[in-house]
Image (cartoon, rainbow, N blue to C red; front, side, top):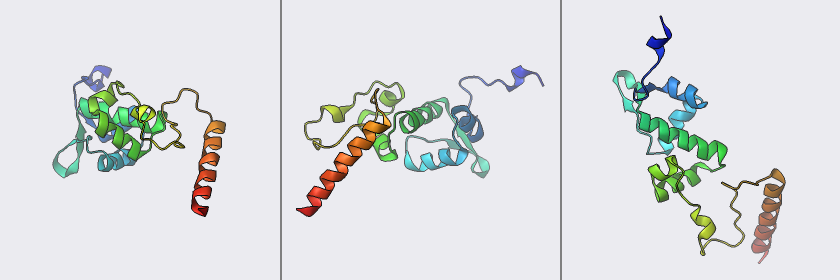
Length: 139
């Protein structure tokens, strides 16, 4: 077969293996994300086979970026999607509201989306947090 028969239109639906291979995550992780992120809604055909629309793939890529590149937890990514919406997260047009939030706990350190995060600074921040927790448990 020629290469042109294997090339898909950008608007074509993708199988789970195509999406997983395309963004570099295992298929089981993608299935797990479906259970955690209501924004991922593939079409399911006979036999439960999943087909992802281009919009689904964009959302999955944004979630992968949040979890793997930006250091968000699943709960943090869920909150970001809930507060800012899918379009803002996909296009990275959201702002880090927690940095501007006056009600945030004073000892909470924002690690995600920082350009100069190092393991040393993370360790130091965790040690300070641990010490603060120990102090609060003693009182």
